[in-house]
Image (tube, rainbow, N blue to C red; front, side, top):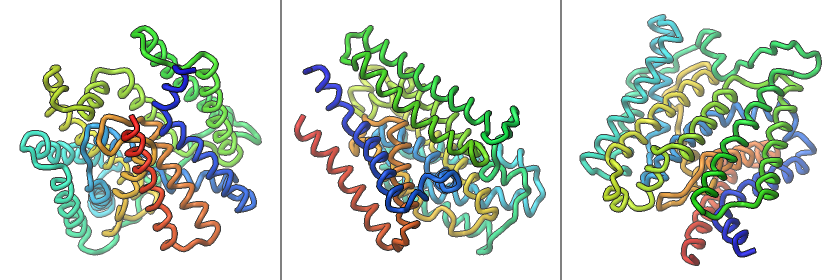
Amino acid sequence: MGRLKNIIQGNIRQYGMLVTLIAIMLFFQIITDGILLKPLNITNLILQNSYILIMAIGMLLVIVAGHIDLSVGSIAAFIGATAAVMIVNYQVNFIVTILSCLLLGFAIGVWQGFWIAYIKIPAFIVTLAGMLVFRGLTMVILQGASVGPFPPGFQKISSGFIPDIFAGSDLHITTLLLAVVFSGALIYLDSRKRTKRLQHGFDTSSVSMFLAKNCLITAAIMYLCYLLSSYKGLPNVLVILFVLTIIYTFITTQTVYGRHIFALGGNEKAAKLSGVKTNRMVLLTFANLGLLSALAGLVFAARLNVATPKAGTGFELDVIAACFIGGASATGGIGTVIGALVGALVMGVMNNGMSIMGVGIDWQQAIKGMVLLFAVFFDVYNKSKN
């Protein structure tokens, strides 16, 4: 029982927010007379929050490393504007544009990471400067006007759906099969992580608890994909998110790079003395976030079908809030990819549910702010008791 208590206490933020997400969804499902979980609304919920989910994965690594990035919304806007000018004004092929913009986002991340890692300017200052710089450059590129529309191929990044190669009559069979593959991949990664913990003598969950957790996660994924399969199937952007989730879950839990990030956030001096190349790790985390911010900017522009000077405003707050609500520690060293996604979904479901209920944007902002405050308070309270 003592061992089980330690495991639960060590994962209370992660599991607590998952339970909270389920409770919030059930609450709004009842209040909205079943509208929340209708296939069309679920699809819209995914499309509306896809860019936040993408950036939350990258922001998690930065926060775990003990830093913060305030520039992600401006970078997303700048990349969207660059893509619009290249495609609409200069008729550049959209595939070439996408690759070029992703490379540009990576370069921006390297640039900011250099000042933070090697010049030792605080991340808050560097990324605040970046927020102003790239917001200004967005307006310069667009010359104060919106640029669009995009060709259909580019729009499909956000608004397209995967084809059903099995041509199911009532259900999208390909969606259900991909759900099985994704669930199996998550179970494999969790099983591998548990095996390694057992090999090194660390506390781990019992077999029954391991099976129960993965059964619940699999059931949730399958139910979500069943709802989507009864509409148009999996949106292309959700497939991108599935792939990113698998890749970054593997990186953070199964690789030396992932362990070094957590060591860096836990105690930078100790990590450096242990042989971790801390400066390089900081640079890479910001480069990675720049890349994912660029991807999010492309997805957002494709969804709107136009690039605007005000795009991305406030994204950084939603992304940071998603990570903290999902269990990341404000002092670094703690956090999970799944937790960040759960935190982003908590924010997204609250926005969607309150919008269906007709709650004004002013009250929505106030409620989200209180949720963030209590999430960080919970983290500080737990640390003070340990």
